[in-house]
Length: 210
Image (cartoon, rainbow, N blue to C red; front, side, top):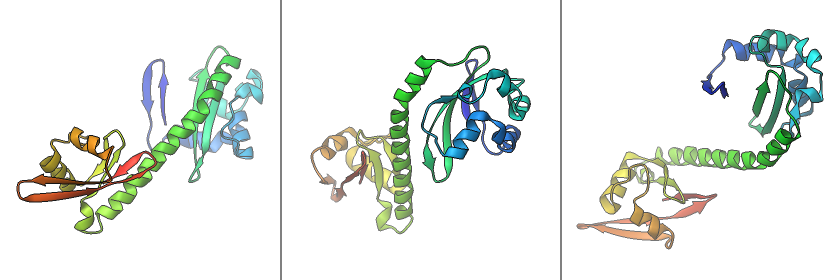
């Protein structure tokens, strides 16, 4: 769980008491119960779509989880389920409800949030796949995964050493000269003293595999 409260960042990891309490009582939350019942995670809703302020404050979850924080109004939107995991962006307020402006803004943002989430998922899956390949043997250890702009997402120590030797310092990014070559070639041959390095390039979903 990550969030902001009064300008302060909040990060909770693992099974906290609050999370356990929420899971135990979520059936009494008017909006969360609706989402679980219908599997509708991507539409924009407020608690007031399903219950009045008085009705919300009478729920067990409000009394146990939200009373002390003064959470009386709630707006959220989610992303499609990912491997059975829900991902919801939640906004709360103590003294006033959310209106059409906030709803329209979240509705406009939701497709962009989905696209960003897919990009992150693709990148993580690619990193995991390349890491698996890199563990397969010596030949496969010379593998680098980067974005098209040159940010290195994965590279073994051997790969980084080769990049530095043949193209210059990496510092978390592909050397500038190599980035320029990648834009024009699928195979690159570099020379250093009496040694030669052949770099083969594959592109997928905005990522580059070397």
